Length: 188
Image (tube, rainbow, N blue to C red; front, side):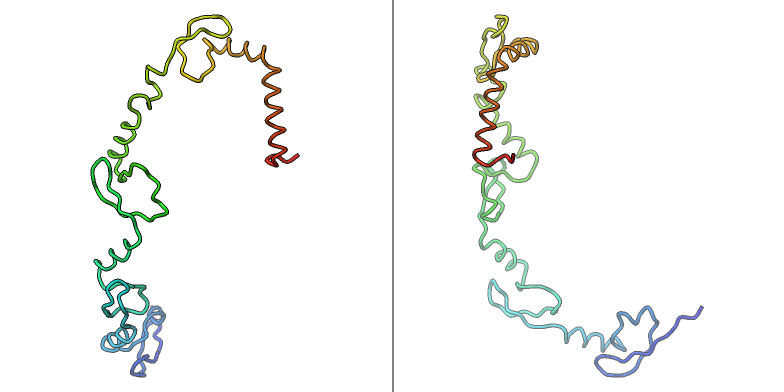
């Protein structure tokens, strides 16, 4: 099967040239010399936003800086420098993302070490000093309990205590609901 040829006119020299139907969508010049001239005509001179040096680039490219070094300086102009407390590697972040009291880089090892540092001693939820021995509220058995928890030896004791204190629990729930309604948190 023969390919259908189409006759087009060159954008630069106005000469007619032929091309296939599939090439007609992107082919706008008749030769490689016209193509080079056409690409050069689409270039423009811009001024670097970082150092002020003039540089040449294509109009279609969104380029503000003349080099990679200027681009890095321009990107970091408003950013805060943070060093990882574990490995010492520096990184630059936007002021809006600067929240951490102990900055850590994005490596899994560094983040894991920071978490283990935070979980030492009193900060650890399994710290023995925080566990106390108390009596079960219902049956009187000795129970290891964490500070702040209710002291029950089993779920059955807890259920029994809740049955006995159901009126108190329901009253607290009703009071909380009334406060939420008064503040406008809950629709009726």
